[in-house]
Length: 237
Ligand SMILES: O=P(O)(O)O[C@H]1O[C@H](CO)[C@@H](O)[C@H]1O
Ligand SMILES: O=c1cc[nH]c(=O)[nH]1
Image (cartoon, rainbow, N blue to C red; front, side, top):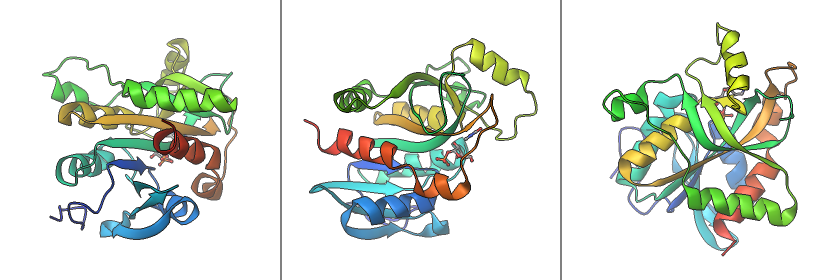
């Protein structure tokens, strides 16, 4: 049955959903990599598609920006459409000098200034972590190809325009690899509903050096991340 934000039926989504923030990145992924594609959501232009990748069913849908938006879509997909795993395929800002523009970062854990997971755990800290088996598949696939990955803690920020630059220094000191805006929320929803989640990111800008990819590049140029994620989830045993 359709939900307030997804006009689809049970069976329209595959068990595995890739979820970029940008709905146009979802469209690009579907157009470039999937066969037998059909659009399964268009409410609020949050484009969602289902199709086949090398013969295996998969869906892709945008999450919008920030934990509140992603949480609505992840909750509805997990609870109403039979989705078992969501892998966020996003962009991030690097917070360490050794993490460079265009490189891939996996959010093994996600720190945050959001309150959502404390609300879930009665006011206490919740260690927002990726599903280990999903993480392992992506790492194993990248290692087999010699593809470089950074794996560790990311920070899911409520504010894109952070007013306190000292926060980035603290992140760097604590070993956080990159900042983005959804992973901790995704991991919290997955934990609450007993599902699997992972976050794979491409560095689109560098907090320390000020380097940046363009908006067009963030929409269209993340093929290393998308191929790795699709292959790891859908073609490796
Ligand atoms: O490129 P996406 O996946 O949207 O991810 C990042 O980009 C947006 C901010 O520009 C936030 O959603 C952040 O998490
Ligand atoms: O959330 C984000 C995404 C990319 N770069 C940032 O600095 N923040």
